[in-house]
Image (cartoon, rainbow, N blue to C red; front, side):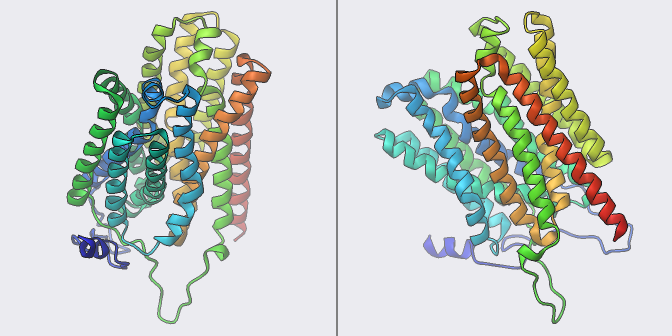
Length: 424
């Protein structure tokens, strides 16, 4: 077992140790590889189980807190600790594993995620459960660092938006189906059963990845006598950092408000608490629709499509803030918000992959994962501070401000980059 594990993760510049490489068309010819539907759907499935595993505790916190004898806020730290682990560990782990087979890494981290979920199900104490979540966070961070760049190795650049939208669909499905189903299972049979079941499902998806995910060669091929360029001297690195800044600003703004959308809907829009689950389901379904639309927009008009999506989000949130007393307007604006924002993360990921040079893709994927998690955690913290000091009504206004700043930065960078490209 140990020998086979070492063989699985042996550094390699070959496409894979398991199966033949993906065919690539010869430059200058009209031939092109068929669209890798099965491989991309395999990635989407792996993302589905990984995201479901990450957010599974959110719907089971009261049950977990009661059984483990801790407060609700202490149990909530399980989500924070997981995200913090991803932020701290993703880039170093990606650097340490940059020479290993991408497909092998995905399989190994899925096995670790499955093991972490089983440990969580068996946890005899809160402290043990924290350790299991940290292990899962380590694997989850590396998982995203690999997966975020994988689709760029499978398709040509003109199909990148479509490919990213398909894989990102796994994350949307996790919020629409995975987390609600896990929560329902946990309430019916106990939270430990929910963690056990998701662990088994992760194992199944690891087998699917082994069988159906095409291998890729992520190594940079050098010409005879060529000296490898250090990553920090790559001219695209500065642009990658700017895209990360755009991600942090936009995701911070989104989560400043959306983290507290349930109390906002109850206090400001006067919905009954029992209707919140249905409204969140509507938002998740709307996000899936937005993701499909983003798959078309990201390849055909990436800049205008991205700007339009952010502007629609701003308009929807403004409508929520100004007409919170009208339930019809609130529900309509809430659904439009979900459609518009549903494609934004996929568009940002596509932009990152197009911005990074081939040699920077793996580092860019790790930095992107870190940026998203900084935005998620930072937005939740900022929203909580504002909630206590200024009231819940200020959160939509703050989100609009962040979105405007992120969009302005994005447009400015596009203009500067276009000007420099023309000069070059």
